[in-house]
Length: 275
Image (cartoon, rainbow, N blue to C red; front, top):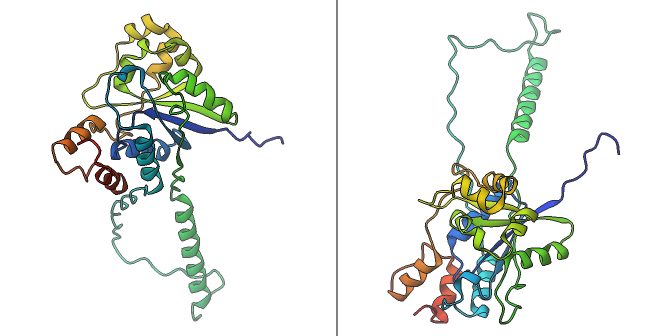
């Protein structure tokens, strides 16, 4: 129809990783990506054998997937922050009451009062319309990489498969700044960066790679695309929380309850993981 813009496809952000275990930093990042409008949905995809961690001792695929499902099923977004206090306007003298145009000097002012109430109701409706609506938080998971027995999990293969499964979605890939610095070593890195859009989140004390190095590895066009895929630090809450640090803390008997969803912590304790 003329004059009506076509509906855009939903943006599906793929969040890959070992998730050994999934922690609050993962969930907070995914929540902010949806809240800020960078994506409509986040698909968590745990890797069976990450190419850069083939010698790492991971919890079993079954345990990692179980913890991921528990985290997503029990996730509750944090309450919105309270609105900032509004300063009351000061007037040099009280404002006179509104008087309807057809009221005479001896009228009882009832019609004017009704108009006042109507005006206040309109103002309240306008304020409600101006309040931003929180988007629905859509998290779900896939075991697509866990089904690849004995082979590394290459990101480009996973994104190709997800794009075929969800042809009505615009598929994006979530990646940390530390991973961007080593992206040129990934399997088919140039094809990956050319074909898909990235959401690159900042990491504490990790600088983006110099532009000349990106250009050397990917060419000017793709390097520019990657550079502008970096999410602004003032919109994404930085976190130095890592799964390896959590595993070390659990092994040392430290309290990790502030870093993990309660259901995930219960699962770890019940199955005696990371001891």
